[in-house]
Length: 58
Image (cartoon, rainbow, N blue to C red):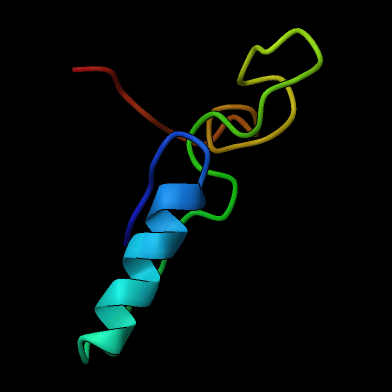
């Protein structure tokens, strides 16, 4: 399972892993913080954190 800030890099990484022969690959579509809003802030339009899914900062 792959995740990045917006979901774009994890999507690219998932494609590369599938091309390399991995069979069970998933990525978080909107990433952790989602796309930028009109003020260029993340976390307001979508993503893992926006939907209140569990996470912990270490």
